[in-house]
Image (cartoon, rainbow, N blue to C red):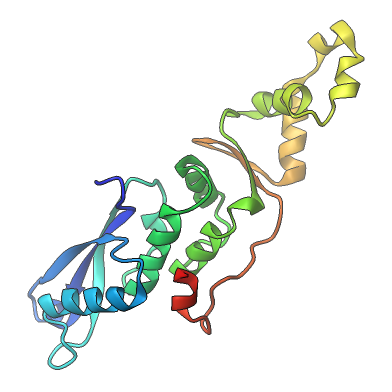
Length: 208
């Protein structure tokens, strides 16, 4: 998959599918970042698979592919292509690593629809991510030794620091913060998700 392709979707003619014929096309997202050109591209793609608004009016998505773990698990069969494109565009330009996004998806906060995912990607600052922390011991050590939160306390302990139970300390932090350990590191939420997109939003504004 190309570096600038976030995911692919196989868009299928629903009417022909119900008649026993599979006619569709793989679409690489994002398609366009200009709303006018995007609409033209989507119309062309749908026309190519026979969804022309005359005999056949509906499509559905039979498959997704992505190198971002967990992303396609949150996408359904009847997603809006314009919103899918916006999601891919936002991921391509997000201000966090792919590893953090995968951990955010595993965290599971607001991932039930493409709209949820767009809002999630627009709220990367609402998560605290530690990529090198894999377990409670690592978490306890990170907070005690590297975060700076308890620098004065632990510096004054001298050799007693060798007896700190970092695992228990880390477990207590995780439970207090409601964080989780993911395949890419530790993640927790530090703020609520701000809604940038809902049913009343003009999609073109978000492209800007």
